[in-house]
Image (cartoon, rainbow, N blue to C red):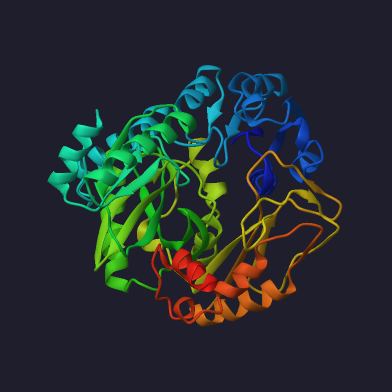
Length: 447
């Protein structure tokens, strides 16, 4: 097992990784920007190294600075968390070249499944259902040609995209010209490549993803699904596990398809396959070759520490259990709490004057925030994740309502009021929602 792990991230995920390491008897190294000198994971880690100014490009995306910090402190491994360099194959390769273990898949696996076009091809080969789609689009004319083959409506996507960027829908040729141009421009501004492709646009799907773990000896398990359909501008807001839309047979069928596909692909470590689900059918979207923000709800219903398993797998350990050993217990829901105006979603950095996290049976809060902490304006606005677990979905909903009432964050605006509003709506209570529900609901409030 590793003796020292460098955490190449910030915020709540950095603290999450630190905690897993400490429970395994592993020392930690926190890297941080100048703006994060007082962050909780920096204060708790065994060692801390400042790797640059506040801007991410000068710190958390600075590959050389992070690897230098690992070498200076004698770290055996680097955990990238999510975001930043977590799916950067070049970084993973650089880490391994310096004799340090990258806690995640190999660079080759990341390139195969992190690229949306090659991931689709690998999924098809492995027997995973996919939406009708195109190869890389070479021009507007090429895009229109493929749109006619697939049939409108379609969605144009950046092959390296994420977080809703580089995605544009089109319902006809005129809209396609604009969608192609805008998606390509966004891709160029936000990602390593401006290559785009297209898929059939499903109009009322749910967003369902399957969590997997795979060791280096060919053993693969899935940890069930998460329903991530409560979204705003393709950004997840609330997630739950299991999905209220699936029955046990559907759950087992897609789980076994995913498990066998991952075996065939030869992927290792943790990963998530994302699907759109409509009219009883699954369509592969992409694979996230890293830890997911919403992993705690899977941990709640399975009892498996996913970060701990990532570290064990990277160290060369076997899973030590098979699919039949995985037991699913109850229901879990996660709310992403952002420091934003709950109406306009304008980021609201600033000093936390009062902080009280809810507690009690079945309540978990993942956050680095504390009273007196100043939220820097340079990074993502998510400041906490509230996770609840109950024996049934209704029990989890009641617990979530109570926990949100207890949550106190003063000094900045947060999205807690929005979460309280969402979970009180009949459609959410009944589990009758899709990926467009939240935006339609918010539009209806204005009328």
